[in-house]
Image 1: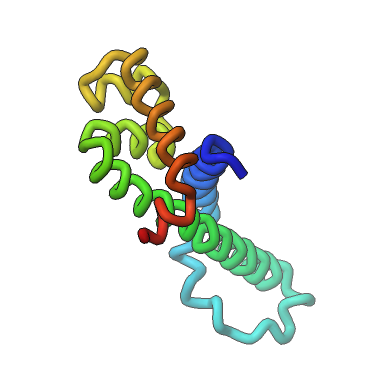
Image 2: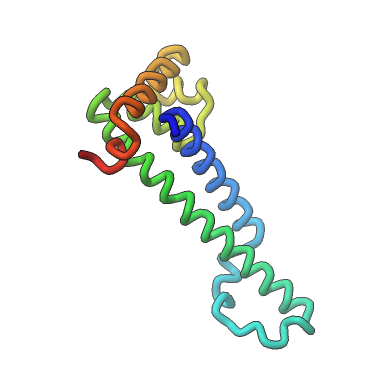
Length: 142
């Protein structure tokens, strides 16, 4: 996997986490958390009970997906720290905004106080650095 592919997968994971969080809010997952450990005996004959258990199951699946994707994002956060150490704070901010916060280039440039062209150049150099150093070292150190 190239560094660009990895950073793109980080952006996808961060975006998917946001989608899962929205879906959990729509399902009212906080409300159903209290019934998550209850027995499902008899819920098949009770449409409301069955629906409640399906909602609980859906919330559990979303929560599990968020946890899995969260590990990818956590690795990228560590890589951003190392980018900051090697390239400076602005580079870390650009990479964080673009790949972890899923911002558009216009949003990245406003947030980081650089032009869109400069933001793209910084991101390109950060990706090249990730390729040169290696994803494993960017995440786990030396």
